Length: 144
Length: 479
Image (cartoon, rainbow over all chains, first blue to last red; front, top):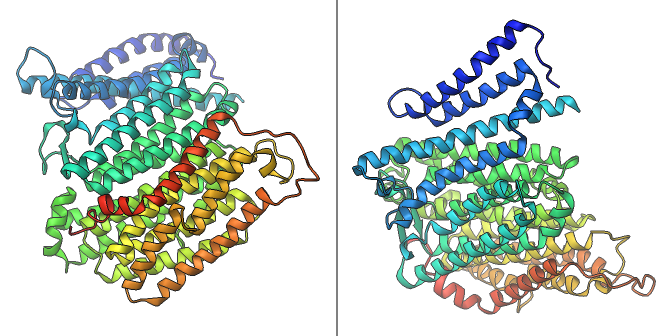
């Protein structure tokens, strides 16, 4: 079981770091097209913010915010967002995963841009959910 | 929606897999019905697409609207539609039969189990429909990684078996990937049709030979054919019975399909010396698997070794690569999937709460009858499916002018008599008088699956000439 850290410096710093890390994850997600980053990296940063939370403020602080089954649902829900984005094109008479067919008031090239953003959002959730579950599971093995 | 048929079954199974953990938040009891319904619908769609392909010819689908060679292509021809239909239809009944056993074992974890099982089937479906060598690798890994996890759900000795399966399966996948990489280096493309068109230009290149050997070795390892079968017996013995009933009939068949696809259609290697080597490997597997199966006393280990023997027939047919042998090999993909599903489901049902081996035929008459039908099919007794696949294989062996292969097929049949006798003896001829006991049939879900699969085994036998004429003979390479 991971306990709350003794040092005030650590706990205060964690409190500051977590929201900034989550904001940075959002930045990495939406800038994935143009700069280094993307869904996977954003998901890792998002998961890391929760892991830092657990390491600094103790496992209870993590358990109050998320639980394992929710993270599993998030992991598969993220991939589901990916698949559903792909299916929209199929429903509208184009091919599977054809983001140009997304019903957005923009040019086809721009529609592909947004399609990839939806997909990357799904990947972010999936990666974050998976990593948090992995962290919780490893912690649980230690507890037993 | 007709034009989307090549991808629809895959999408249905994938969405069902992803929904599992989400419905698990509130209503984990729905996991089983959702899984069976989704795979059933996908099997129906696959059967429809098989009909469409037989009627109107090969379907091609450019995923994302990107035309090949830039985009990734999904191709549905007779062979891939046949493989897809067999895999999904048999899996539907394996999932239906396994539901009660899953519920007992994973009290709250049902959705996670079904998510893995459906991801496994997504991988197998993807292998069948993909028209891209690298995409086959991706789907092979989706299917394999989920199957390692499925085997590991057994706990205890299953963990060691799963780890061995993981190590050897990863080596197999790496070999396949290495082979694809070498072919990419020399052809500059991953699209199967493109590679097939360029093979005549590069046939003399050592990279082509290396790629071919790596691909064949990797897939033979994934199939679990002797002498690369080391992972298979332990995995099938120690995994939970509902997992084996799902994996054993379909997972190795997808590897067999990939071997047929890459070896014969993409690389056109049916005339090369490696085809003879492959035929001999298959023959060795028929004999070695059979001999090891005869010596087993534990029913599931016996069935695992019999799989090695029966997969040997498929490899033998692919190595011979003449029309009759290929029809036999493809038909055996169907027949072996049916018989193995029946036998693993029946053994799983019979071993639940049994004391001793007495009188399964008395307590569970329907289960026992279905098990005997599958055993007869495995030996190759006429009205059942197994007879016809062996008949075509025999014809192919005779046409190849190599009498030893004929002898191997006949010897394999004798060995099958030996090991199925071991099973049926325990089921049928035990001392009924001594242990009367009450009749306690398996649950309805299990019986439905067994009866449907047994009926399918008989129908597949009676209709085999039609299946071969309409689907399998025109699917031969170069037709």
